[in-house]
Length: 382
Image 1 (cartoon, rainbow, N blue to C red):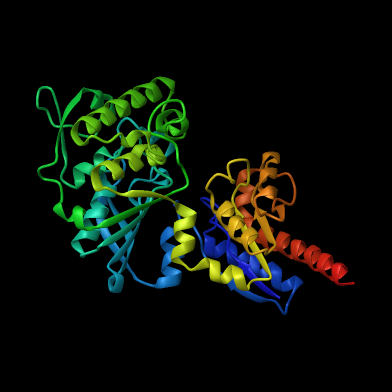
Image 2: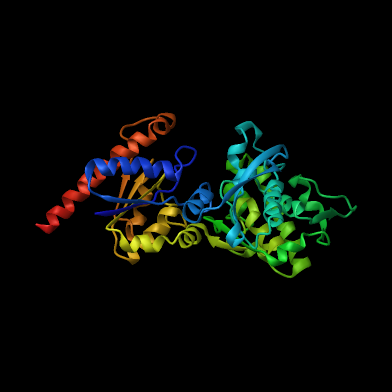
């Protein structure tokens, strides 16, 4: 039996590679003769570099940038010299995990560090940049990123904007005279699992602001600031980027990438599965096992599991999903290519306990799932 193991990372716990190793351990206990193929995957959040480097290689480049609160930070991205490609995770510079709960402040948090990583990739001569934009701590519409790339933003008194979204509504002029000219000859692809527009009830501020530390009043202020920024861009460039799908991703970084670097927003999982030639592995598999930290009603909307499910369904391959936590609203996945969903939690436990035993629990549930699957296919043959 040829089994393809391709879980997403279990956020803040197991990497995709670690989760795959745990699943493999359980599978081989149930089916020692199984031929295992493991693939790291990601949907635009953490793990993009690992997934792509595993398939195409490359060199990890360490650069000095600034974190969301403009403190010095060393961040890493992938550089593939032969294809002049860089793979960047914005969360490496401006991610939520870089701040403590008390430090969360989307009115002050900036994407400047993300722009610094883009600039470093341009310095290496990259002609294509893939940037994963999941896991952000920011809500600045990409203003910080744009500033790092040479853009300047001014208010009516010709004062330069500096990392304060409470003042972004006062901006009245975009100066792109010093914008990095290399952006024009570089293809930038943003990998996202979020396709919200920039503003409004389903926009960046109201949908995701709370998890970044914004109270209702701050969410409203941020939304007004992003509306104003979008209007400035419309007046300057004649395009309503804010209404496009993905503009609201990463606190509006999707918008900023489109407006200031001419990036295109893609489904992160579909883009990465294409880059690692995943479909060829699906065609050869007898069974696929995937997984994620939590499987719920949102999983079907652009998450890693849903992308794999679409390929599994296309080629008629059974797909098992092993999850750190499962909610009842995940049933929609059964109509989208997932054969069965298993909860790796073996008993009622706290989040801390679940995370501490995640690898062992995953190995146990994968063994149990494979024993059940073996029983089913053996019975069918009889």
